[in-house]
Amino acid sequence: MPPAQSKQSEQAFRDFLHKLAAQDWVRRTERRWWPNFVFHYTDIRNAVQILQDGKLYSRLQAERLGKLVISSGSPDILSGTSLAIQDCVRFYFRPKTPTQFHAEGVHSTQSLGKSRFPNAHCPTPVFFLFDAPTIFSRPNVRFSDRGLGGKGYRLGATVAELKTLPWKKIYHQGRIDRSDPERAHEIVACRNAEVIIPQELDLQALRFIYCRSEAEKDTLLHLLSPKLRQQFQSKVLASNRSELFFRRRTFVESATLLNDRVHLRFSPDTECPGPFHLQIKITSHQTFLQSDKQHFILGPSYEYVITFPRSFLHYTIQMTLDDHLVYANTFGDISLPF
Image (cartoon, rainbow, N blue to C red):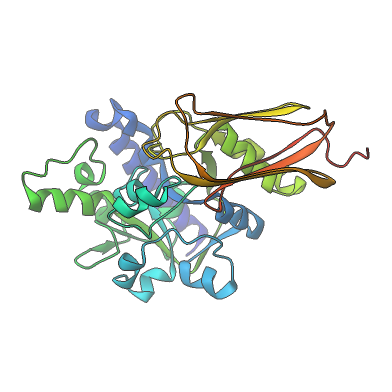
């Protein structure tokens, strides 16, 4: 596509999305900023891989290249999803989709057993927000009026087709009235509407990277190389509100690292406090403290304190719940000698 035509197309998409955001039912709610972006969420370990690669891969490409660290998709849903769709990078028009509702956060074994999709699990989610007009103006982009995990969806590519999407259903907020099963099913499907690009996408249109808490932001930055940390640090933010995340399941809300102890605080909003298999490893050139609790259940304080046998100038900490990475960071300069 020639540059002038591409620029004109991007402006046309931008104009429509600006008008959508200006409508009263959008601008007077938390949805007011949704039209600016398309949303991709994934587990924190996948997020690190994406930033290392400098691109997003489709599920099939990521599997082929050995880059899908954590699979959060439900096998039941994937079995009904065409391979052509699975070979696309996939975005949502919004955060807090029905798919995210079932997958977000660390489920306990009991919680997974009660879930409608027990194999859909994104323990520590990270959101990538891409500039929507830039993405829509790409020549190979397509978007749907509902989720692509089944049948009956419509695909479009033009501004005119974007205007015809059922926006009030895609952006639907709040509880769904189940007294009308057909309408309820329609709203769930539309909330999962998607934007797709074949095979891979670079990060040029990436605007923000959102983590669920300051502790998870620290974890993401800790897992990056110094070079990548410097490159992306200004884009990495923590959202302590519920605009991006449901926050219904266990995660580390804050962490205070001191030279003689670690103070962890879990989210008090969790609906599944355990039991979990808790593992904490603290290392300073060699492992000096390790906590392994098979039946860890969060108490009413939602806090967990680890006291060291002596003070340390520097150390790293890594914590998992049921083998899911939930926190990692460094205290002091780990490169310093004793």
